[in-house]
Length: 115
Length: 188
Image 1: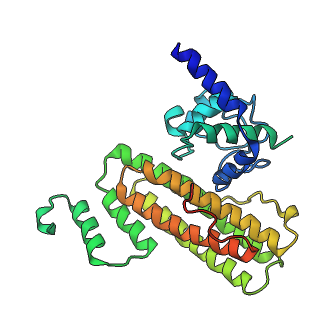
Image 2: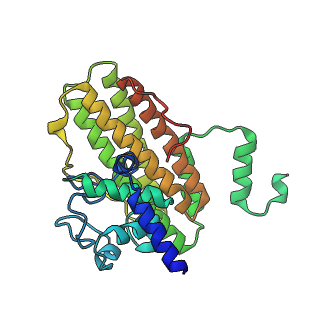
């Protein structure tokens, strides 16, 4: 019952995700990331479906390379909520995006930003 | 509360700094934090050094980005002077971060030999300012996201000191662009 409710809630959040708000939230990422090129963090274009730690030439942490994560809405949502808990040892030393709605907006933006 | 009643030296020093009105530069705060960090647990030290190294990498990139802006020929005085001043702050941050990482037993990252910047998109002073403002906004968020992660709370204080400086950069750049300098009551 609880899981069904959680699933409905998750669908509701995803349905309401706003890429324009996500673009604003992406401003928080700009110290380290860009869409089209690698910086302190790897590029975000091509993220969905990509295996974590796999952008050629980018110096990932060993933890990220070993994580076996494939980036999709679910894995990205979990990582963004608390990067250091999701991948202990990641170089993304950031507390995370705590609010589910903000994560959904950010993911919605990332899905559309490189089209 | 008296300092004499406090057994923890770090707590005593924090209280002294709070109550005395003593003003410290960001560099001094960070270096002091490095001294305290020597007594921290090994796990905390390694973790804290990793957080600082991510910040250092971003600071070194910011130094390089301001250099690109300064050499672009697109910035006019007094904006050019402002950019050079802000670049100097980032250099100071980087120096202090590197020294603190070393104090923690870590190895500071070095600047890259080459950075990718969207130079083809920088065609005017406003383009350069907007690019710099984006970096500063991101830096504020990055430090905000790092502050709660440190094992050593003095390092959180040092990071907050840098955060404050970079928030001022962001506000001034927004003002120069004609945007509201302080867009909200909180940063995130």
